Image (cartoon, rainbow, N blue to C red):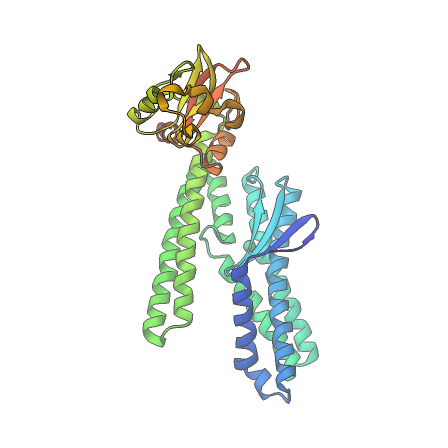
Length: 362
Ligand SMILES: [Zn+2]
């Protein structure tokens, strides 16, 4: 759900965020002691809880905006910020160009949280910590301090993990090496968080411990996805579509009838095969194209009338960037992307297997 935009960056709220927001409001309204002891009606308590929760999530947003604005000044475009159950995430459309850039983009988030913590603390002191509003501000100050400290844990995708990655990158001079080291440290830390959650649960019952286990699990998932993504990016950097392609396992001549053509497709495990007129590709034939046969008997239908035609297929030029071709393959859920030249001549197919083979060989 899109709620607006700031500095040209879209702000999106995931539905899981509404759940955690409601939980925070409820916890504040019913369990936060300074709100209970003060002479407030139920409405006053509720209002104070909602305002406090909104200020807290506003702080998370400022944290993310700090990342996004610095990313942009470092030449990395940012499309949006999403708030979800574990906080916020900035969607960077690219990678930081160098180690200092990466370190700064990551570090300004916790820095912003620290500054917000100091600000809330000062204002809370000014109002007086005995008043409900002052107590609310002290609570916000502590929450932002926790946010800053937690995010500085050196486990990617936490900010501390990225700062750590940038430092190792700087020391070793190798981005990939840094990704591996930071990934390993991140996994160890995630397991420590999980173990801590289990111990807490055993000692105090479900609640905070369960939450820690969730966070640890999330770190584990997100961390390994990040390491894998970085390895793939690294392996494909500087390559083009022609480096990834493999010859088609078989082809179907344009004058084939449907019965022979589908037999051929079956023989090659049901994967789509190119339909060729000489060296030119006219389209692809897959098992699902059988639906187009209708009532026509197979031996009387020509393959060219039931295949998926070339202009309806995602294809690539040999010089296309390898990463963009892999994205097309993954996003569109295609089994293959044909690589063709200007004359529609088929040069090869990029398939999931051919990509994996290429990555494994580097
Ligand atoms: Zn952050």
